[in-house]
Structures are given as structure tokens and as C-alpha cells.
Length: 168
Image 1 (cartoon, rainbow, N blue to C red):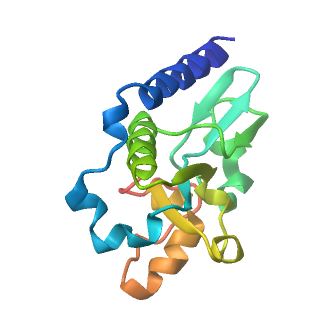
Image 2: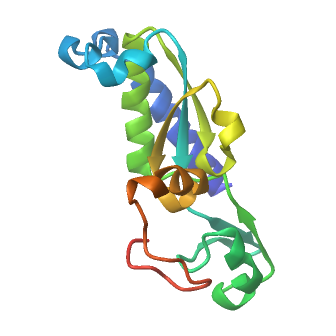
């Protein structure tokens, strides 16, 4: 019940931030006119969060940085303090990411655009076709992002199942 109340409070704060200060909806002209934002004018933009993996058990919620990818689920019973537990892939976002999404939504509204929020774990090459997409958060929470950036020499350290990497 406390988690539900906390989530409701966070949603209420986000709603208040989105509705206050109409002048904040106007994108600064020099930023809005930047070529990087040209494709984001008057469109629906998918904002994908690279969410961390939490687990739910009878004892509540638990986060273990050694269990964040699908291949880690096979040893989750050894990594977690409470078992049985099940993964909650799409339930959480860090507060800084929520703040970034609120500001991004304001900016996009200033460009006559809308934002649709999804989990970055859910996006695929086919799902990106023809869509404007911005990914926020941890790249390991967005497997497709790692694939897209591989040719750009973006290679985080190799993941070892159940092991915490220094960049987690």
C-alpha cells in the first residue's frame, strides 16, 4: 500500500509539473531551431526509459545490480535475499529520469509534439520503424540501444551473469 501511495504521489507531482508555468512549454528558439530537433517538430515522440530490474517477493521489492538482464534470471534465486520472487521489468524509473522526461515533454510540446513513454526493454528494430525515439537512462536497460551503438564503438564492458559491472 505504501508503494502504491508513493507511486501515486510521484504521478501527482509529475502532473503538477507538467501543467504549471505555460511559458515553460515554449522551447528556447536557439534550441528549437537546432538541426538535431528538426525531425521532432509536430510529431509523436517515443521516450524510452532504460529501467533497472526490480524483483517482487512476499517480503517486498528488491534490487540486485548483479541481476539486471534476462540471462541473470537463471541465478536470481542465489542473488536475491528473498525467494521466490518475480521480475518487474517496467515498474521503476530513477527520479532523475522522471525529471528529464517531464522537461523533455515540456520541450516537445513547445515543438507541437507529444511524447509516449515506454520501457526501453520493449523497443525493437521493427518497433522503431518510422518513429522518432529518444532513450533515457541506463543503456543496459535498453538492449536494442547497445546493438544500434555497436558500430559507433560504443561497447560497455562485457556482462557476466550475476556479476556487478563497474558501470551499473
